[in-house]
Image (cartoon, rainbow, N blue to C red; front, side, top):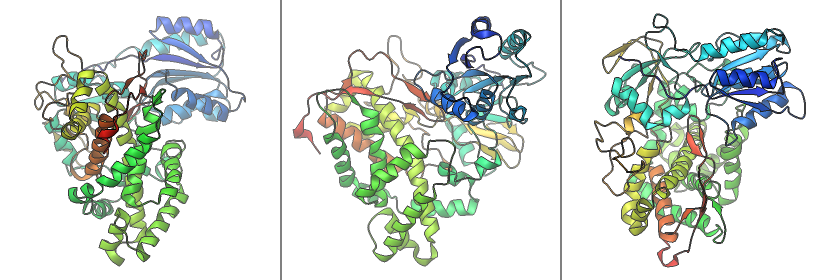
Length: 552
């Protein structure tokens, strides 16, 4: 088992406030350069409280140009915001420098996933102390301290096939070194990943942050959202899955296609033909939500309410229980009990009868909504962008949308891989993963990116190893390779067949109606946010002339 260094450094040194560490911004910028970092100063918010700094820093993390990895340096009241954001986003915060926190109680409890330097006063000794700290960040752990020297992978690494290929080439299992984190192993390779995902000795019953630490009790206890099937009791988990799986058959999903086409065409009808369109905001975001509403039988006037919840409220920290949504879904279930309907809510109620409680149907519906919207949006946005990057591949789709939309969907699932890793699972007893014994209590991750680009399964994958002169990207014109994008085993995606139908319908409609679709001239770079999901923030396109004779 070899150590493979992950790519990328610590990113940037982000300073909260002018001269926030007592050495002055100019001095810290010089320290940053010597430490291999680029310094950036965030201007103070309108107020001076910790809450104001939290909002300021949260906005920065969501900006298009914010780095994937960063060191945060703060002084005074801003320290509380830095500690909070480092705990909430351990996948992006490499280290924290805190000078004279106000009040002193803001000093974080042990267990923060990243290294922390706390200095009591912003005196003349701050500069040398900070420089030593930054220098240490550049060093790998000593061999005797950690026999496997892979540091925690940042989101950009997890989504990058070339990085994960280096891990896979060195062996199928690797331990990651991340101070303060639960010991974590990453498994690469298609067969190894599937074996881990199906192993009954690995349980997905503990909510973890992106840094693979158990969440604080206050966060783990709230409405788990898309972690519902991870945190519930195993028996309850199987029961919820059974409620949905028996109805989402290929035959019934196919019967929904006319409704999906109407929703898709309705969104495309509303797009302007004579100016730039953000295909993410105008199509990739609203379509999955509308499709899920069709699946569940949500009345059309109520769909903006659920769209606001899924698009705006669910991603906004701190997580909240959102009892109003449960109450709304409960009202729909009560209506189905009185008046059956041929939608998923109606089918679950009719099939289960009195043996299925309303609360279970609500939980199953909430699970599908939360876990089904973002990945499908990601697949649509990132997938169309990947096809437009090579006009010959887009033309393959537009030449015969009916024949190519299906294979293109599978190729984009493999190439885009909306979730780069499966949920972290806990070993309840020592388990064997591809010949490596993993102790009980450790976390195990399956790299779906590595599985989807495994040369043992797809030896001629241009997305991972392009031939000389060829561009990376999906090839929708060939027979699809197998992929693990929907997971495997007990926690495999419930709505995989429905998600495929939505994306297939969307690609076919775009290709038929707007074969000239292309990026806005002059677009040099597309901006992605890399977290647990790597998604496009915007996709500026021109639709081109519409071909009405090809409307579905």
